[in-house]
Amino acid sequence: MSIDVNNESGTEVDEQAILDIARFALARMRIHPLSELSVIVVDADAMEQLHVQWMDLPGPTDVMSFPMDELRPPGKDEEEPPQGLLGDVVLCPEVAARQGAEAATQHSMDEELQLLTVHGVLHLLGYDHEEPDEKAEMFGLQAAIVDGWRAERGLTGPSPAPTVS
Image (cartoon, rainbow, N blue to C red; front, side, top):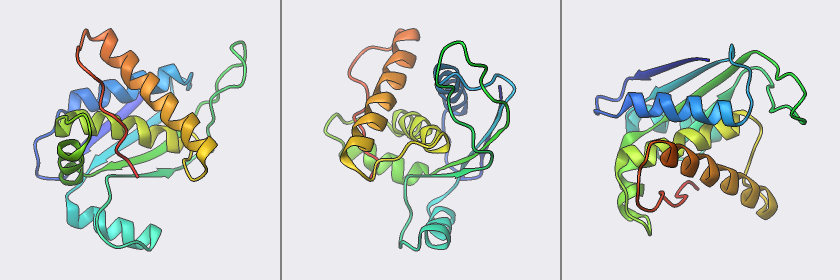
């Protein structure tokens, strides 16, 4: 799995954890091991520009996903996963820090960025949360991936609750 993490935000973030959870999520979703993903960490001004340009919405957001190839998890275990360029996940640590502090289960900016990384990866794979049934599926899968990653590392305590909008 080729995953690049590029921190352009000026904020210190746990890039290794972002890389590790992205790799875990892609493996869990059975994405071809030669597929490529880019994770870019930007400041609030850059995120706001992207949010306005691509979503026509004001202010910075927490995470945005820009898919390239239309990769989807294989339907059956015996199916070979397709290989390709997944796309870009863009994260904003300033928004992540605020969301983590305001969440019902308060958590760190880095924990929020890990959650947002999984959220962004799922968007690249075609998951969405506009409709209640879609939201239930996506957020359930997101929680299972984050919980699995945390358990594999022996991290204790409650996992971050979904704070993405």
